[in-house]
Image (cartoon, rainbow, N blue to C red; front, side, top):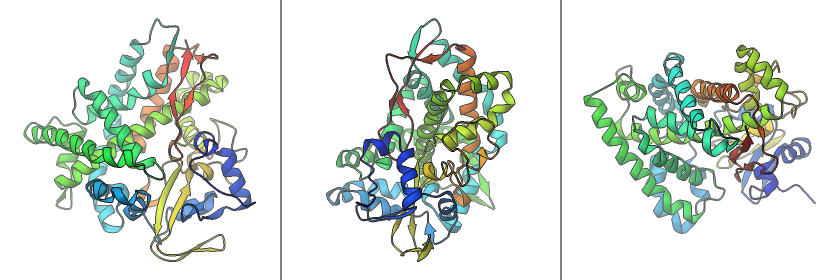
Length: 403
């Protein structure tokens, strides 16, 4: 019986490393009749695919194929918004948008933000002090990036629950394969609510700028070009999704790896300079985003197999990051791994993650401050952590710990 990759199997959703290994060894370039799409499992192929112009990032059509036919009209406004995301742009449109949106994500901007990241960590940790047990996912890893993004968006603390809900609803729509009717019905009202809220904030900031992240985007200009209002509103939804879902999973995944490697966490506490490489190794070992899709716009060959124009291609980042041809003993977590930064968790090529500096800073601050506040932190043996049931993302919905 041949191999059959399925997004809906528990093994694929919660611990896909063994699945990836089988495909890398037996069928690294795999055509799925079930999904009518190609899957790439090897590092070399995934890295090449993310840089190959024959595989386009402008892939809204691929999302349409995942939507039930009777929901296409309902989701049309949402797809129109997604088409404006820098994530789904290609060529000169992508280069223009990326140059403009990069203003808020420059290393200088992230350095200026770092003191506030420490304050966010302290505020969350203050609420946990004195307790013998807590949920490190729901009470720390998940609210950390929500708090940061709400502040970047200029929203007050009471809006954080709405920010979290917006992010969860966008993730439900974007990461489900196929996309369920329930997600289709809910996505447009959520995007409308987010846009209406942010239009009011942006209008106020145009009149009263504060020199913060949002003001950088509003005032961004390159070569006489500025961010159009519709593009700004659409891409704030993108920043919300990408900055929240991936970072909370980075923190949760890092917690799991470090709790299971106490010697490594002790090393990091003694020598903070090791954090930079440790975050790379966390991202390699448990990639927040497990796959990225592309749409073939021309025939292209991988592993002796021809991918025809019009076919969808899934690039399995999580598999590439466990390829032993690149990372010896790939399932071993090693904060000293010399090529950890070669991981593809942030993608590669022109679409390399715009917010990688922010994600690194949030992961480092969140995990180091958690260790400092609770040096004896350990898993709760009576309450195992609960993993996301999602083939596109890897992380935790609950992570009970003892202090």
